[in-house]
Length: 259
Image 1 (cartoon, rainbow, N blue to C red):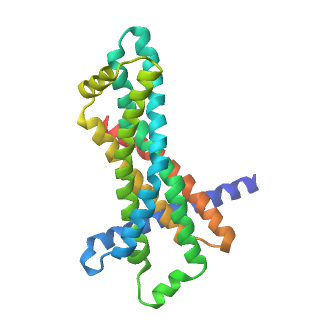
Image 2: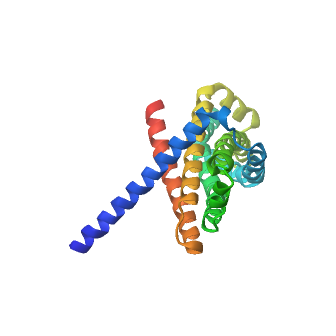
Image 3: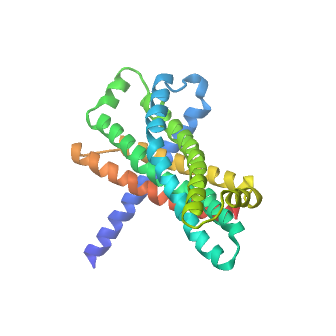
């Protein structure tokens, strides 16, 4: 019993320590944004982060979105054909993609690729004392390394979500025509007549929150790593898990608030 209580206490303290670190980092980043004129993030580092995190993520994100859209078309199309309401097939697939499936799947793919890479990069810099070297040169690692990555990850996840939504709708139309025999025009008018801009903006809003959560988590675990090379691996694992949990929790609350 004593061992169980001790283990539970350690877990609670560790969770509190990580949550406190995330909140502190978020506050420092917010202060850096408010005091932008005193020291804007490094432009070269920002553009490099945008390219690495955005352009190189396009193929995997679009492939995921294409098949996700097709899957939603199969799920919705099977039932609407039984009911003779094929005009609602596009609405069923598009509603699920724009509001839920698109932001969540793309966010999880983004956290697995970009978030993990960012954590490993920052963690390696931390254990090799490169961040200490920047401080010795009077360069703030927060503005030089972390802020550009946070801005790039948040912005590029929104862009990738928008692209993914469009590709997912195309994928659902392709599957609807080739597998379910639903005409292109039927799918198009089902999208146009039943989906509202609010459905699209709902997913975009979620992607902003997901991008911020992924960026904050990956940067926090990257700069707080301890234990050398083994610590880098643990930091990457913690970053991916915490990002996935944050996405699910944020999705619940955002859906509840905006429903």
